[in-house]
Amino acid sequence: MAKVVLLRHGQSEWNLQNRFTGWFDVDVTDQGAAEAVAAGATLAAAGLTPDIVHTSLQTRAIKTANLSLRKMSRLWIPVRRHWRLNERHYGGLTGLNKAETAEKYGDGQVHIWRRSYDVPPPAMPEDHPDNPNTDPRYARLPPDVLPNTECLKDVVERILPYWFDAIVPDLAIADIVLIAAHDNSLRALVKHLSGISDEEISNLKIPAAVPLVYEIGPDCRPVDDTPIEDRYLR
Image 1 (cartoon, rainbow, N blue to C red):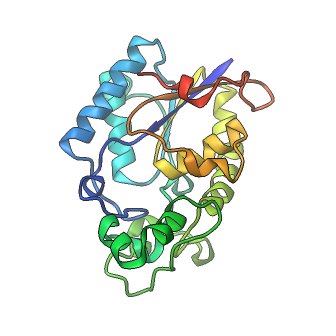
Image 2 (image 1 turned 180 degrees about the vertical axis):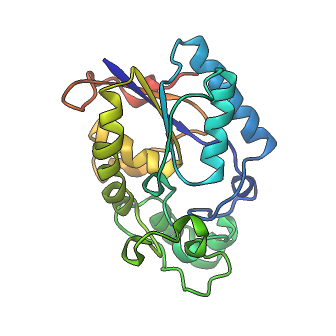
């Protein structure tokens, strides 16, 4: 049976600065690059070298995938990239320091924006200085699919079509598929795969650059109900 490996990117520049990043494109830090290399070593040691890799369109996920694959001598495998694997769009919070935002709006409100399942942050105005929607990588997307804010529910709704239409077919022809993406896009996939409730998903955080492994059966579901914490390769 095929396995899918979920890998959140290593520390990014805005992770280090404690800023809301979302769709804004930033690179990994030196620490993040080292984390990606370590993830590749962990996968190689476990005999989980991928046959196909999927990434978002964002540099931090792409570089994490490449560094991991280089460590495994697998840079040659097929690559699929798609905006549906992007991080959650943080709307008007994009670029703001998280601690300063909590001081302004209160810890409770910021917690709702960050962790609730169906409450999005304030929408991003078109003239926002960090508006990522003008990035050329999204130029061919229909305007009605470009978000100006998202909650996790929105991410689930945009990522599941990609799971079924792109990743599941690859699981039928590959032994191991690697998905290099982001905290919230991977939380959305884990919610689906592990059947986590809307209420409980708020407690789940995906650690940076720690591989998370599911064995997928012919019904496109995990073959067992192993707890999430026991699925990590550390």
